[in-house]
Image (cartoon, helix red, strand yellow):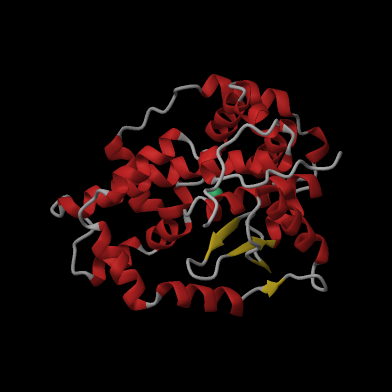
Amino acid sequence: MPERKILTGISADAFVSEADRWALDKLKKVPLLPMVIRKFYEVGFDRWFYCMNMSMSVRCGPDQYSTLYRIMQESCRVLDMPEPELYLSSNPFPNAFAGGVERPYITLRSGIVNNLTDEQLYHLMGHELGHIKANHVLYFSVGGVLFALLDLLGRRTLGASDLASYALILAYYEWSRQAEFSADRAGLLVAQELGISLDTQVALTAGATRFDHEMKREPFMDQARAYQDADVLDQVAKAVLFMIYGKTFTHPMPVHRAQDLERWHLSGAYDRILAGDYSREAKAA
Ligand SMILES: [Zn+2]
């Protein structure tokens, strides 16, 4: 792998998708949201999550899982952002997440680390850093305990009787899906090779098996292209599925995600960014 390009001064606007921005604006306009966020801070969920995560995982550093730490350091350099804390925790289900509004951190589960090559881990790291850089963490953290927060506020979350809660759940669900597309773009900006990013998606979709050597990217992409616009679920069905499956349903759209990332690459946006043409953070005075 040739040396990675450092995207000095890059702002999240360079990779946040239009749909993400639009859905987040819509979410921010839901009248119930400020109250829910206030409750989130009042209860101290952010601190609580941070402590819980720290108590259940191993913090990586120069002398602890140094390869993972190095991958994160380099990924931060590429996206020109401060380093969050990095943790590794035992869990066979391949997943990773970014948390911590006040003190950002990334936690990798053992299952995902075992499932990916070093190069693919750069994509994964870029994806999680993308969530942090785009300020997704607050909304994801609130969304993760949305039902509990609504309960604490005395709102009814089941049944259509509380329309305000329903509107919030729907807006959150819609945004949380869009946020993944933006983060995937950040993943590609760090991996710096479309094939690596797409292989990461295939590997995570199929899972690690003894047939890994038979895994192919192209048939998966054919499948992804065939999926085009087959987003048949209507809004109500999506909200119901979200209520039933919660967060687990927001992530498993890997086929759609691979297709979206390929399209973004084909649009030329990625090449322009790598060539230095991207929106930059406003410099502090
Ligand atoms: Zn994500």
